[in-house]
Amino acid sequence: MLATYRRILGRPGTALFSATGLVARLPISMVGLGIVLLVEAESGSYGLAGSVSGVALLAQAACAVPQARLIDRLGQSRVLPVAVTVWGAALAALMWSVQSGWPLAATYVVAAVAGASLPSVGSCVRSRWAHALEDADELQTAFALEAVADEAVFMTGPIVVTLLATAVHPVAGLATALVAGVGGTLTLSTQRATEPPAHPPLADRRDRARMPWATVLPLTLGSLALGTLFGAAEVTTVAFTEERGQRALAGVLLALWAAGSLIAGFLTGAVTWRRTVLARLRLGAAGMSVAMVPLVLIEQVWVMGVVLFVAGFAIAPTLIATMSLAEQSVPASRLTEGMAFVQTGLVAGVAPGAALAGIVVDAAGASPAYLVSVGGGVLALVAALAVRTGSSTRDAPNLSRA
Image 1 (cartoon, rainbow, N blue to C red):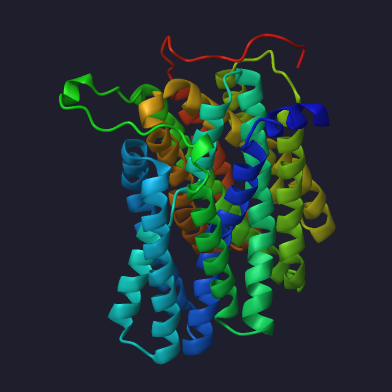
Image 2 (image 1 turned 90 degrees about the horizontal axis):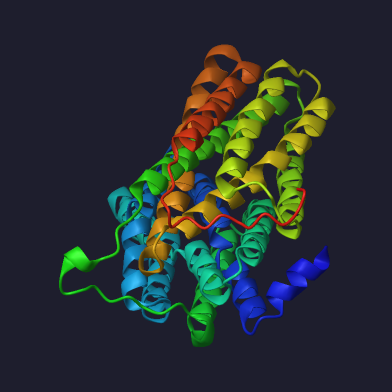
């Protein structure tokens, strides 16, 4: 099983850019929570803290695709250093503004700049894999590896930023994210040997490769629905444990959910699949929606932990199939842009999902709020069923019984 991963990591430069990318994208799981912890510590208001974090998140979602388009045109080595420098300066200014009592408007401005300039490291790393590997099965393994890396980031990042912000200093968590993001991104941008070639804009825009919207748009909407599912489930799980006087176990439950996904992602990358990527996407989306249904009926915390762990096995395979289908369908000259659409959808869905679940929790309690996650899964399945692929889509070869 490990031989599959050793094979792709044995290619020149791949292990280095994958490891560097892991460090560089730690901020995506640390900055939002770090802002909340810092602003709340200084102001005592979770509402204000959430609004500052929300501004950064909205700016990130709005600017991720334009940034990715610029990366496709100019190259990672030219865009990433500028983006991460602006991001680092804006995040430092945000920390300074909160600590120094700047006007709230100024804090919102620097939060927006920080969100808008956050480098699209995940898309860049996956583009490097697509450039380095030609075999569809090996590329699926690479995307599985990155899905595992994402789960590791989202399991460890919140723990690290919370520990540093509460036990050391309110700015310590964000400062650590800043160092990891700037250092990792700058190191990634220096690895020119594995960088995909730039695709400058053509003089005649009619010659530009077309984006396969029949594939990309449903994938983006499906990712938005999955983001809603994730955001709702996180808030509802916290409320579930709080109702039972065991709020400290919320992190454990969410970690079990992520652990199931991490294991499934690792296994997915080690298998050569007979089913097409589109079929696996639809099966995964169906599994995500079905896995959320039992959560509405569970009363005991330990049972919730078991069910969440099992439910997590649907996450990574669905996300891997989503990114694989995007890679197979989008022209190389617009690959980072296409992947950014999908990843932005995922990020953009989290806040609405969390907000909607919070409304249901306040009105009816935690258990009914899991229905928001069920709804997100159903919408993701509908989007997956709406995906249409062109003749250029390269399905994985039929080599095994999986």
